[in-house]
Length: 93
Image (cartoon, rainbow, N blue to C red; front, side, top):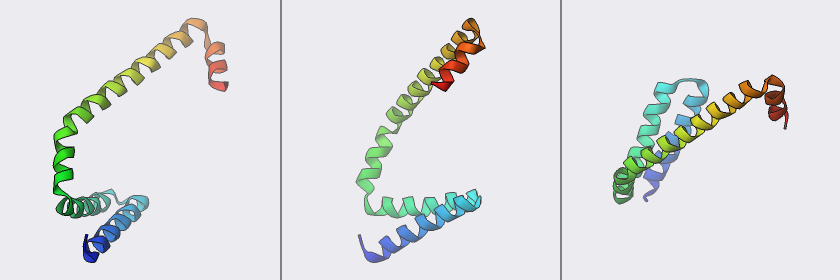
């Protein structure tokens, strides 16, 4: 990767982080896009691979969130069935 691309990547990523920390999300998203576009121009085959695998990643994430949601519902049901004392004891460890 040429030095100017490294500088552009580091500068835009750093500026994006600063914008997110300041609460300026629009500027942060734009600068993150600049960073990703720079990486995509240098490694197009890797980005094509990620793009092809994206539906699988989204499906796995959805399944994970579904499992976590069901576990939370089950804990809530158990807490309601056994009373608040059991739930508070569970939270304290």
